Length: 198
Ligand code: GDP
Ligand code: MG
Image (cartoon, rainbow, N blue to C red; front, side):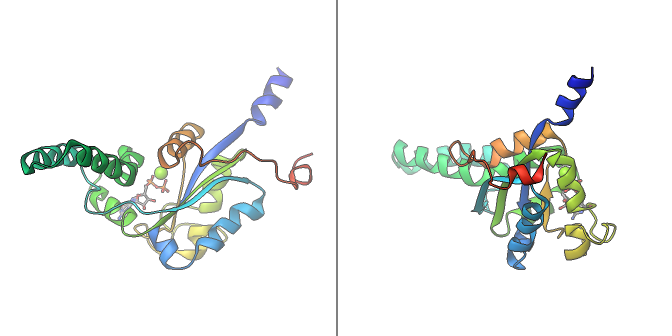
């Protein structure tokens, strides 16, 4: 029982952290990355990424419509396929990412917000990283977030709360797979590893 408990406590998890467009626009990227870096988690993926705005909603339907339009326009099939791939790459993520919130009244505003400028996508790894990152980020409403947390220190409104963090190890894996392509993540051992965990 005890070895099993210890092993489960030491389970290495991954979380998806994203600096939202307001964080990028306000020059908070370094500050936000720094909080996770200083804590001692391991960065395994990092990129600046722009979800395109006009096609964010109902991306699937949009793509089908394009097929018809392009076919009637007499444009080549090759062009169509190239365009679909581009749309898929740049749009589907934010819809799929927030699919659990699709029924909420603020969903359109949320998609608008998240596609309004570049975001910084990050994958972080470590024992207990998912729950710990949520604590470092603070409550969804920045006015309720404790001082010392990212949202508590750097934001004033739910609709502009500067950062995202996965809410479970399962969603951590799901979201990293959604925002990163194969080959974009790095496996490495930080030199400080033995100074962080005995
Ligand atoms: P989180 O896990 O703390 O980010 O919160 P949720 O998963 O509940 O919501 C996802 C994101 O949707 C939040 O971070 C906000 O950006 C946005 N959001 C949640 N609730 C509201 C709301 O009532 N109004 C607006 N405008 N945005 C909201
Ligand atoms: Mg959430």
